[in-house]
Length: 99
Image 1 (cartoon, helix red, strand yellow):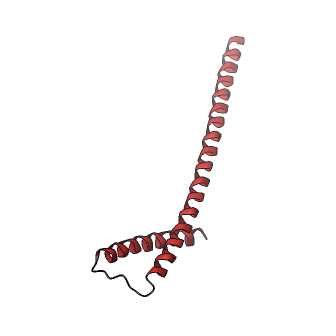
Image 2 (cartoon, helix red, strand yellow):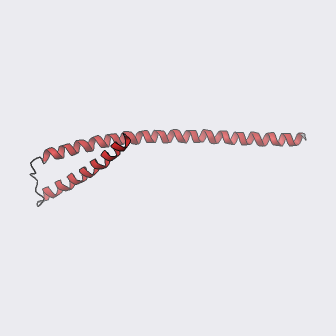
Image 3 (cartoon, one colour):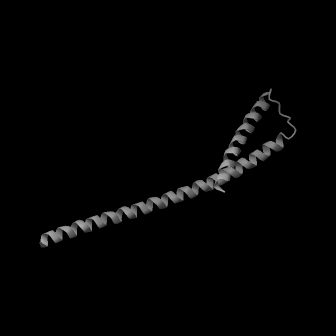
């Protein structure tokens, strides 16, 4: 009878130790994930501000529509403007979803 109680006590102590370790490990993983998410949010807000600034500058540069699509500079300008516009639309959509 005493041997059975000792065996049960050892098994319960082992299970409690294992579950405690797993809880500690998972808490550390959640903490690391939270730091990563905060870093991503900071990066996204930085990128959003840079894209917004670029979009504004591109609009100022071509306020008269001086760049023609026919020449090399005009084609490059159009590609840059299209890319920045797409990025702005994407980030604006994400910013509206967060609000």
